Image (cartoon, rainbow, N blue to C red; front, side, top):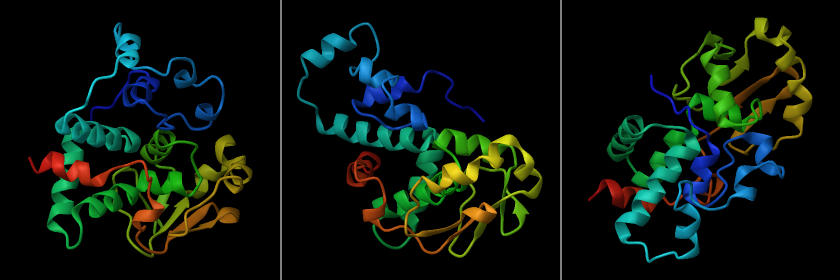
Length: 212
């Protein structure tokens, strides 16, 4: 499967705000957005100095691109998730955000077992996590209510997971998840509510983009 290999800080600069794609580094002065908070490219600085009025289409496109980049999803997969959300009961936009939030890689990140979604994706790809006792190495695996996510026993002996307990304790976990740091495990208690999902995402604009 294709994956983004360019500098992720360019994505934050393109969206004009921090997307916290590099974990702890985003909170330090080393963050590229702190040094160059304007769009990438040879005309980026000039564009930011003379911003024009955005069309409705541009706003919808930026909202969709921002959500894709926050969750690390490519267009084809994102469109598939939208189609899935469209077929579900309830509000399409909220359904879409819940689908994105309950992907295995995102749940691992939300439990505090990775410093970023990219790191969580890598850990899942390498088979370090189990779902209900079964190995799950697909980042887009849909976690369901009452599913138990845990670190594989063999993985607990690695240097990364030996220090993870203390690091995870310092990270907050949302109320729709329960974390058992002592056993490096967690459970999904319920679906996340809209107020518990990134408030900077505009799901209505995303729906409008795909409804054109």
